[in-house]
Amino acid sequence: MKNHYYHYVLLNILSYAAIGAILPLIGQHLKSIDITGTQIGIITAMATATAIFATTFWGKRYANSHRKKTVAAFLCIMAGAVAFSLLPLKAFFIFLVGFMTLYFFQSPIMGIIDAMTIESGNFFNDIRKWGAIGFAVSTFIAGKLAYGIDLKIIFPLCTFFFIFTALIIKSIDIKEKDLEIAKPAEKREKAEYRNIFKNRTLLAVVLSAFFVLGTNVANNTYFSFLYIEGGGNLSGVGTAFLLMAGSEAIFMGVSRKISGKITMEKNILIAMILSALRFLWYSTGPTSSWLLAFFFLQGMVNGIILVEFIRYVHKTVNTHELAMGIAVYYAVSNNLSTIACQLLGGLALDLGGGRLVYLFFSLYNLIGVILYMVFGLHKGKKSL
Image (cartoon, rainbow, N blue to C red; front, side):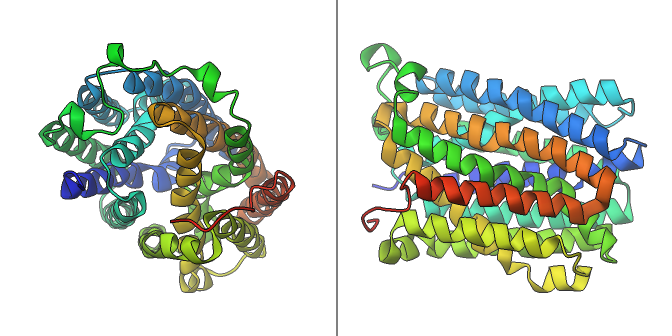
């Protein structure tokens, strides 16, 4: 039985709309208040460092809680409140602290919603593609409003979407028997991180993904610089993300079928290679028109890796450890990697502009491709 399908669709649309409203344009906002490229890298990297602790902290509490909806809704409400509080901040250090606080509440939400979706019995790919649509539409709206009104509009937009995400979470009439792992915490085996870190296959997946996911997250910050260097403007950034993130939904929808034909493991490998080639092309400095014309490259990469790596994690862990396995995946592969990419990307931005940022991203991805093959993760049976 597929439980509350449309509720989970709305959860993904709204939660990803919240981050789509703020992340792609946060670099431009910081630049507008005289924050340097290196400082932008520090702010985003330190916020992501906070996310490493936050995802594991809240992931364990979610995994061992019998009030899962309350944990998820609380995080959304707090993330929305903190996002709104960033509106008047201009000083580097104060904004840094505020952005770190936002990430403490915001960063675990995606992993928890992923876990909720899988636990509900719905097909993950079918639900997750709506997150890409929410991100794309939100970024488009934010870009138009930022261009026509003020960049600060991104903060109340983020708040709006997070508050509605919390309302949807609370509206889902989930009973414990409806979730795959949702026995009361005291009656089931307690999930512990020490068991997660003994799982060699999971650790190999996490390490390989480390060299891919960070660049694709940091791209949300640095793409606007490359696009504007190529002759575009803020309104065009919103259009570019609408097309790019929107194309992710298409490939998320067909990714499972592709994996069924060539295996999930090989599907991921192809997407990783394409990611490295995509960023290598970006490093040549294409015009904004060419960047728009090849918007579908992001879909071909992110539309596959964002869902198939989660499915790979799901494949390697016990059911009751799923939320914590996803938390480790997000903490290391996503957040820790993003720290490196944001810091080094900010430095590269100051030294050589957007082109140098994307040359670094391409080489970084190449390391991930090599590790993935060395670990033998590309081998596997066809996915069901």
